Length: 576
Image (cartoon, rainbow, N blue to C red; front, side, top):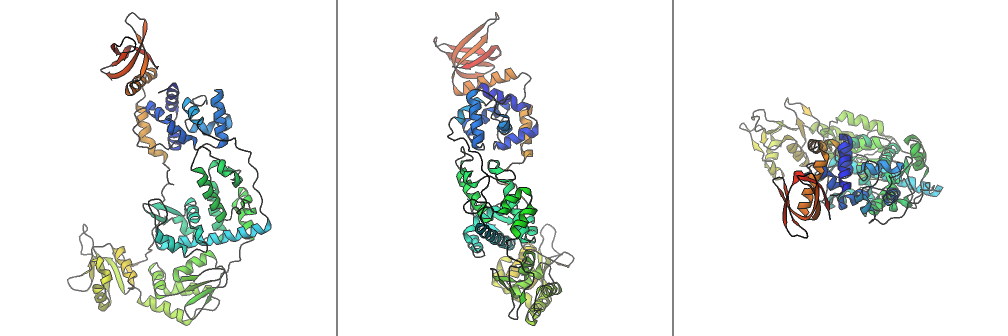
């Protein structure tokens, strides 16, 4: 315990709840930490390892300013004072605390050089960077569509599991961009983590229906806004060649800076040499101008396709994103490049019917999209699949008690139920016949039974408790969790209330008690000033050994006598 700790404890007590919560969040404090009072909080926040972690968030320029202020014993300059103060690294007057001064002396860094303007890209580089942006937007769309079909499993390290990585890599024109694209999607709020799964968000479904250039700008703006403040500059970013030296106290920063540069290159925000194309330099002025700059170099998108008799579709160029998403609900994409091909199958048509499409809605969409009309084989496939769809109905058993609900599987064709009942792939569902043999029941939830039947290629539909068909969507949507490591301010409410309740009417007495407890715990040698009955004060130098019953015990140095001093008479204590 030092005087700096006491000063910080006094300062913490003056903060309002929102300021205090922001400081705790900035320092990475757990909301469940077992602090009893402000002295506990100040003691932890001035711990050398904890202060070193706080310094990791300061740029080279800020570290230089704090180091100079600490050496001179002066307040941190005004342009950096708010940031440093928000981390609890200074006293009330803005002078670095002793713990801050000690920690910053261990950091090796150079004064940051002035930031240069972003180097412009030449015409050839602009074309290549625009092509990279176009490819990446399409690839991210493929990733999100895949996530809507099935979530991605994550390993303990946070990486995508190998099986999903292979599945995604097969969809991408540049598989090596996968990690950067996943990171960009998470930054833009298009993918989120729930447990061990990486799921699409509701925002992802909206993003998929936007034009290509709008897709690009939404992610670009989100990425820019989430850049660490040390490399943000005027609504854009500083020269990428200077990023590595931005946070010298953070050993993990160079790897993070490298990942950010990779994301910027993948998204066409910077060229491999760090040069910025016109659309990147236009971002500070608004996304509309940036979209116009990039859109002028993107390939022209088409809004018509060729439907063929072999149940395939050919797009003569990049299909407009909204049309591509709708078409891929009805067909499987077999190849993708400047021209893409799609194949219709009974399974893809049945899946669209399950999600709420009808034969009429599909044929109307295809007729409006096709340059060649709807071929008779494709119309026949759609209509026959729609006629069969709903042969098996999956709903709720009305006779089951509420406490033990059951799923009911019915069909207008008894033979279909006979086949389902003996299908070995469906044994895990535990399907059993009802008493009259007209249906099958299961204790497995309705949705699970439905998708198991569909996977086994039965024309199943879901029905509600009134027996009405209900459109079903297989994919899960993330609930929208906080970013990794973030803590909402309200999480600190209980901790702050505990600290508020600990406030003593006599701060000096409370501080003295803390100093005595600290000395006893560490069994340190201290000078104790004690007021004697005659009003005089005597100083005892002793090794503190115990505290209890309102008395401080310790062996006095020099005389080797065991002393017991009443805490109420102690007027000061100093470590020797």
